[in-house]
Length: 499
Image 1 (spheres, helix red, strand yellow):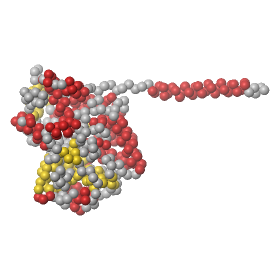
Image 2: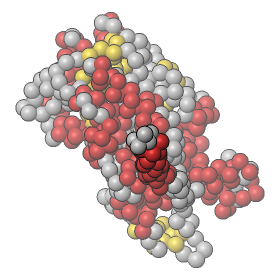
Image 3: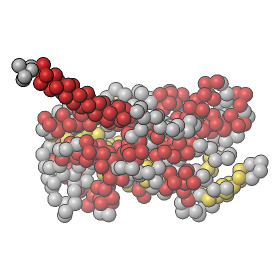
Image 4: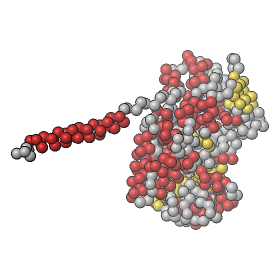
């Protein structure tokens, strides 16, 4: 906003004691008795995420590629560990691999028709929004391994179980990430393609300097937002325990559709850990460091599944070896009840079994972050939507009087990612500028806002195929009977049984 008009003044009310939201960069011990910065929150960007890449360029922050050489490890449904090298964890029997390929093709075909900006347009949208992703899997996958692989990807992407998510939200989210495969890819255009040198939290630190630290009020959650005739009055309460939008009192109240959507949002459950090592031992053994696992049955943690959902090589650009991993969804919840020492021991034992090395049991340092304990965030990596309200999801972007919305969950591309946060912020800023200083906006700025604010159109009319597909067979049967009857009569007379 201040780039468009430097005379405008911006005040940021930050409910927490730190800036950064779902990004968090912390110092962790590394080889040589040194420390380096590692991410415990959002940490990847993609060359296909144009808004965040542009912002990184403006802030003079550099990226480096996610390490991807070597075999990846997959485990689903049983004790067996599989090695694979493709982008997608497509392992198991030939039939399982065939099913997974067919499933990905179907999801991406549906996703081409379902946009986050208007998910109700598809004729099947109503049915899809009345079912969970789990039901969708049961209808389209038949092998246990194929189902478990997709469930595990869902856990890692959303921090939720497939049984919690709207199938329509899932398919629209696939559209927003430009494909199902992109959500897990570590190669070109994938969601985990690039890392940020020095950590992702630098983005908000650099932006804070541009805004001016005096303009950012920390630990100041909003309690009430009241619309007056000529302005909006905000009341803050420093001792308020929660200030998510569902905990803020609005006067006048938010539209009912908007409130219904907010009530159906569910934060993901995710614990992130980083373990640093003297050497990248997994690379020495020919592994990329990437693991995807449903917990399996290959080890017994007192009737609990093994904790790790996925891991990746987190070695810094300067070469300090590390692995980052995630305890996601139900597993994250179960293991959050254990103490730190018990959880650490289980995680390191898992790494040891995955990479077949006792070196994994002895990291230089081990740090973890349970995002469900983060005040005013409540979970990671994204906010998912449960079934039944996707037809109203456009209301999340609709201004409420003088209040405009700019969270990553309101984005129409890469919703839930850092790129989504940037896109939503740019859109909300232009909306405000349109009200305050419309003369400084370009045609492209205004058309962009109108595109993002488009409401759900009515579903496309269904062609009257049904009546024809029903009538044509009956017509053919009728014609056939007439021909048969005439032929029978003709044969009887023509042959002259009389002759």
